[in-house]
Amino acid sequence: MLELVILLLFSAFMVFIAAMLFVNAIEYLGFNFQLGGSFVGAILSPLFTSLPEMIVFVVAVFFAEVSTGEAIGIGTIFGQPFMASSLSYGLVGLAALIGFYLKKRDNLVLLVDKSLVTPYIFVTVLFPLTILPSFVGYHFVFGLFFLSTYVCYTYLMYRQKRVEVVEEVEAPYACKVVSHPLHGSVLQLIAAILLLYKGSHDMVGAVDALARQIGISAMGLALIIVPAATAIPETATALIWGYRGKDTLCIGSLVGEKVLYSTFYPGVALLVTSWKLDIHVYLSVAATTLVSLLLLYFISKEKVPWYGLCLGIFFFIAYAILVFVYHL
Image: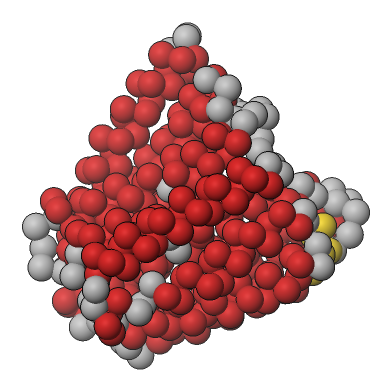
């Protein structure tokens, strides 16, 4: 048991480091090719930064060679929105509170652009629909439907042309050993992908073995373990923006990927998996939808109070207790 836990923690740490290297490199490349100041960059950025989770999904489904690989892969897809809605938003709310008392921001209410209503409508309406194919079938049809909704979302965001993006990025970490930033970012990207594959492969195996040993669902365990490793870079960025008062960037950075996990990635997964879900997915969808509805209301008013973001923490704690204490 102890060896499995150590292997899981080490592989998760490996994926975390790889995700940080990946996001840092891909953001610099996007900025270098002037994608960061355009609509294209705003739409492509979530795709790029969510690739670590997609690599874990691909490894789990196609390369892990464990019977629960598909369940772990599906848990990864549902885990990111749940993690963002529960732990990430809660930490952002606490960061805003700390930033206010340290005089880094002016108030305890996050003032956001109303353009964020569009992605939140997509998440609130479409994310609950992702569980429907597990009851009625027609996976191929639903897969095409979710992929088409992402195309629709992209078009609507293009029409609005109000997506806020970052104009400056941090230099690649590889620049400490490679003098040329572009060369360093490419090498760092390659290294990150290789490390992601290795870490993902080991983590999927550890999740499978640990779930069997303690008698809980591999899908349920993956739902919180994988995002805990892969979603930290985006969460850390949102925390910094929330702390400094860059509220639209803060909230927008977290909802951008939730749209992907409500449209694009479920669409892909429905085409390549059996899409068999369990109680853990249903609970995560319910919690994510409740938080999204609450935030949609606040964003429509262009004001999100810090305590409104902290509600999700209770869902995360409750789910962790159900999984690890009661072995749900």
